[in-house]
Length: 473
Image (tube, helix red, strand yellow):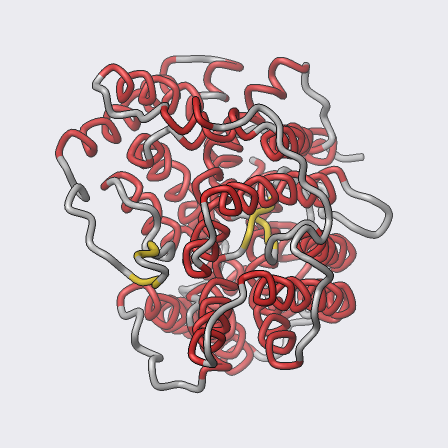
């Protein structure tokens, strides 16, 4: 067993695991609860049902994370990755809810069981096609992998910037009077909010530079805690939801009724699953670079199967499709901690939060601008990892590689800078067109084939291995 594998499988002392796992959960919490919040608002669900959807989501997040990070025979990438609901599923689900309203009213339970049926079907589809997707690994030499990971980091920066300004990610739309859309927030960009975000960033940088060992590893957590204390001291944290939340909530399968399988929602969600799996491939390759662990077809198949299993669990436990959360990839790069058991600890914490709403509400009380300072560090680290991979690409003797990078990133930026660019495309294509990561992946693969031809599996894997060793060094 090589050094990288030893570090990935290292079981750290319990206090360190708890702190590092908590750090991961804080980073992904806002994104983890956003999708059920949006769907609950679009359906007009009451506070109790909305709270239940969030608790169910946290529970399923934790279970899916355990499947992915701890692993089971044939399932799980066994790397430090946390799972969360994919935002690629939001638009198709809102479109289905809108169609139900247009048809003469919405029965929330009927809509939800239909959505859950499509989610379960998509998870089964993901399990079946995972080996096929993993065999596409030869299409991802370093010029493609580096480009995709760079775009992932650039895409995530939008989330960090919006957090710092006091908003959720621009991909997370608010719901007003049951209608989802982009609504202005008059407090966005307030100087005191951005001041706290900057304060958190400075704290993280100071700890990173001057602290050693474990303290340096939890620099992001320390920054968030210090920022939260500062926000509370300024009266900017609302603890009323914490006091109002119950201590215990029970989540059980099919709480809204047995799933219903309808053709159009099932097909649409299977398309979402393809998007999820392509994006996850980029996340797994990024984690492979950060941990120095070689990712081959077998590892990729196990990881993609876990996405399918996680999505099935989502449908069973009253929530939505799951994917490997890119927010947490950057945290691995920042901390340098490669142990997958940190993610396992995060999964256990998420399961507990699903059963203890009061603790979940306490996490939710942390203002988003506190997370903003940490987000800029972590998401920039993902982009930097992509840039580091690209340093191993021959641009001097093969100038065509420049076109692969330049045009692919250009296409990937379209959904970021012009969200309505594909407004007139068929609705069935919207889930594909709204993912900048997917667009970059498709264009990078196509241009690499056009300029450089088919790369053999052996050559692709050798390239990934050499890049991983360079990253480890």
